[in-house]
Amino acid sequence: MSSLQRQGTPDTSPLLSGGSAPPHASSSPLRIDRLDRIDSRSSRDFAWHPHPPPMPGSSPSTGGGFLGPRLGSSSSLGGGATGYQSIEGHGLTLSRSSSSAADVFSAGSGLLLREGEDPEGRSPRERNRRCPFVIGVAGGTASGKTTVCDKIIQRLHDQCVVMLNQDSFYRSLTEEEMQDVENYNFDSPDAFDTPALLECLEQLKAGRHCEVPTYDFTQHRRGSETRKVEPADVIILEGILVLHMQELRAHCNMLVYVDTDDDVRLARRIQRDVQHRGRDIASVIHQYTIFVKPAFDQYVAPSRRYADIIIPWQRGDNLVAIDLITQHISLKLRCHDLLRIYPNLELLPSNFQIRGMHTIIRDASSSKNDFVFYADRLNRLIVEAGLGHLPFQEKIVKTPTGHRYVGVDFTRGICGVSIIRSGEAMETALRECCQGIKLGKILVHRHGPHEEEEVIYERLPSDIAQRHVLLLDPLVGTGRTACRAVEVLLARGVQQDKILFLSMVAAPEAIHKLCGSYPGMKVLTSEIDRGLDEDCRIVPGIGEFGERYFSD
Ligand SMILES: Nc1ncnc2c1ncn2[C@@H]1O[C@H](COP(=O)(O)OP(=O)(O)O)[C@@H](O)[C@H]1O
Ligand SMILES: Nc1ccn([C@@H]2O[C@H](COP(=O)(O)O)[C@@H](O)[C@H]2O)c(=O)n1
Image (cartoon, rainbow, N blue to C red; front, side, top):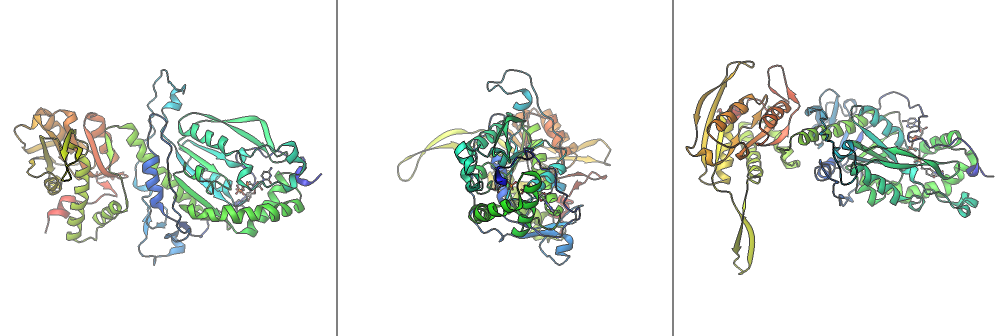
């Protein structure tokens, strides 16, 4: 009997508990590759779907793995790494990343559970889950994938996270294959029951539980038991071929590659397989040479190019990398909490152009010219996005080539109302988009952060009650001034569902107040910041917007 056939302790646990990684923080850089892809995938796929979401049809980039900017601990980059931005409280530096979780406030996880029949037979808990954030984690055998996932799960302790191991979906060997198990290639894609894994993944993404097989590495077959996995906010899919298999990658919002030197992996593998998988050293080395290493070179190493994040994992725990990943996931989950709670909240879809505009606008050292230029540019995008929410009517026109074009007609009867003084900075964008639009103004004054808001001045179109109103204020912090302005409009007979509130930056407090108090009113903002400081200023914020825009 070869050691591949030996009896031993079944290793069917979803998490290998063994292993004691040295608890020192590594200064290894985390190689960030295309965090923009994480974001673009996230904005497309990672949305709250009351019904099962559509299958994401992502087409992975084939760009080189290490071309992206680097991220490392502050010690590794030092102060000289220009162009890098600090993540508050963690001493991290990153480049091009979308945001740190520190910038965003958690709205909690107020699930909207309702009892009742579900046509798909899901429980209320299953039904009300949002579409989960899926992280694919790959890397060579014994690279530390499970350990990395374990650490991510520990850090996401306030979120509901489940793990799917590709290992659990190894096919059971037939009697014939068992006879010649030494020559069976467990590192080939054919060794896995990928349809079963996909089915589980799809069930979880649809908000349903799934039954995951248990696998016995000593017997090379599935156990009779299955493991029930409940739907969760975050699904971690881990395995050697997760990044290699396009059908698995397509499900992931974030792709992580755990990068560990071959010799380190072989040493870890020998130790693990001997201790936990009933093998002897000779058989591990034989299997490694004949199958594991060639398959690594053929499938696993090349799949690194699909990774958004590559984590060097040979020298202790790379906590910098783990923190960055968990911060990014928290950011996504928290933003979606607000979007899920308030159907009347809209976020301007982000991209690097928009992030770049925010960066200049938020930079205290930006010149007045730059501030105004980029504020106007961003406001224009916000206004255009806002106008897209107005009702429309079909309109058919004839093109110069004589063909029919079925289009839409812009809504008539709209007006803008700016909240003085910052809101007036958005008037330019509105005028540029809607020629000749009527504009009104409201001035709300508050003597101190805890005083009542007082309406000092209002000048509104006389027929405002018949109009759709775009209410403009680039910054909303507590939301109290904005609410007071909304009250003025309502008192003038404007219907709630004909008000569209447009802002550049909103604190979560303002979102709660505006969206919660006026569920009929749509609120559109470009970014949601972390919160308010003790003086009720938005953090990280923009500063005094009106002052920066209008003063000489
Ligand atoms: N950073 C590390 N330093 C030392 N040992 C580690 C480290 N990460 C993982 N290990 C050990 O290496 C072995 C393989 O790790 P594991 O996470 O199970 O790898 P994989 O899931 O990629 O096969 C385990 O025994 C684990 O405890
Ligand atoms: N019966 C089996 C099944 C798989 N293997 C090896 O497991 C490795 C994948 O698991 P990791 O935790 O190391 O990622 C893979 O390299 C297979 O060779 C096995 O030895 N026996």
